[in-house]
Length: 300
Image (cartoon, rainbow, N blue to C red; front, side, top):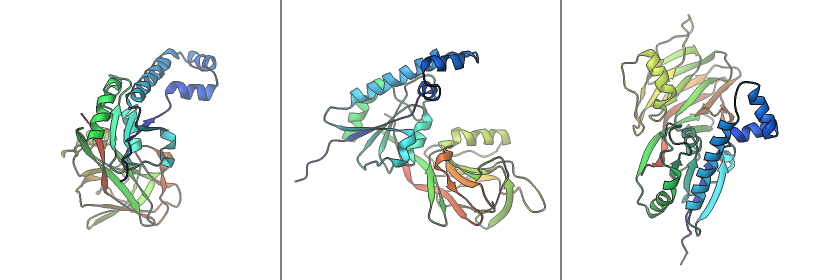
């Protein structure tokens, strides 16, 4: 009879501002001098770094001794192999949960906030001191989990990506993005600053800003809502390009098709991470819809 393995807790983190300063300037004194010449202080960055370290220590101590454990930084997520039975503990800002979500396949995520009161706490809802109880509840199947919809972009060559907040499609620079957009039986050639397709989670960020600026008379989806909102940014009217298909909702079975007319520089990326982008050259067709998988966020 096979022996059931203890759970593995994967702690996900990212470099702090202080660590990035040291990496860039070599020593604390050099980093401090750099900031001082610009009227800034290194002490605030040091305190945030210490808070992050305390939170990581609290989470590490909360993992039972018999359990397996691993730790991965944000920059290594695309090379890390998550196991089906993993419990993922994200220690950092809300955006770090979005960064890891696209690499998961149903593993529960415990978001730990090292700086309560300084982060929005939408996705990192828990204090470090709560980690021990939460991990045991997750392992026992007694934790309350909230499922959040994701968005996926699939190219006609089979490549694609998923995102928790939004997918951006456009040009990698400030040049105009040129493409054909199709929703159902409506199609339009456009020149714009690109477009985003956002989930209910993303509707609290970038999509919300666009929606407010336009004074939209329709409601954005909520985090658990299996719908998406799309917005074309600064569509340009011309004899060859239109501005009619610039925003709307996509239902669970709807799709938005975009065909690139960019000779070079066309890209698709998710949640603001350009390093994980997919190239979108002339003639490539992308289909954007609600992703099949969902983020399973532990909420209590």
